[in-house]
Image (tube, rainbow, N blue to C red):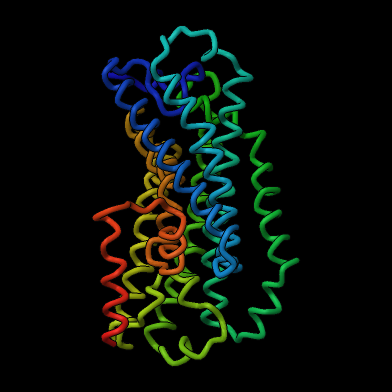
Amino acid sequence: MPNASSWSASSPLLLLWEDSSGTRIFLSLLYAVLAISGTLSNVMVIYLVFSFKKLQTTSNAFIVNGCAADLSVCALWMPQEAVLGLLPPNSSSLRSAEYRLLRGGLLGLGLTVSLASHLLVAFNRYVLITKLPSVYQALYQRRHTGCMIGLSWALALLPVPLLPGLWTLGSAQSDGSSRYTALLLALAVLGQTALLLHCYLGIVRRVRGSAKRVSVLNFHLLHQLPFPAAPPPPRRAQRRLSSVSVLLLCCVFLLGTQPLVWVSLLGFFLRPAPPALQAASWLLLCSLSALNPLLYTWRSEEFRRAARSVLPRGEGPAAAPRPLGRRRGNLG
């Protein structure tokens, strides 16, 4: 059973070397699955947005920004964790401070920009729903949108001096600095979560209170929200489905971020959480990088239609439904 000292600077961030070899292999396989699925889904979303003009909206620009950041975690950081989990604990590469800092930089940069992109998407949708169209057009000009995206990457570089503290959580050498680093991380995620919930709950209140305002907006609203785009259901059913979709997105986001927040706060004010609990909270946060593309596209008919147009289709019996569709059109 690992103790608090096992979470040391000489170990990877999420792998506990005192665990059994079976546990390390399982974690490595889990990282490999998340890396492959997350890389494919993020690359697919980026490709679809750049390839289809209908998908080139302001909200999708922020989603693509988040996908690019998530690739730093899924395509660059997770594969290294999967390999390191299979190496012996005394491997020289694991003890290199420069290499640990590099991995910490990839993880910190990717997660910071990804969380900022979540907030940018939420605020964009909040302004789109709750404000006048003239306000939205003035705020989200092309130049302003580019500045917001660039600012998200610039702000992600500010915590770089704090990264070494993340690699010494629970270490006796730098217990004070690591505790304050964890506290700062928890407060930042908690503040971002509060703003995101404010935006989405405001959207739910406005949509449930006035479906008429939503229907007259001269924007591709149904393509930018996690709502079904077409065919539109009855008004009452649409409001109910819209609320469920937004709340589901919020629940998944809370499940991925809040365990780390409260584990960090617990370690600062009371006592450090067990290393396994720290590892699980970090793993949930990192898994968001693989789930983010699905969170924002699974309810979009435009994304589904674009994906079907680029994915290979079967031949022979699998292509049989196409003539059936024509026959139905003729009957109509």
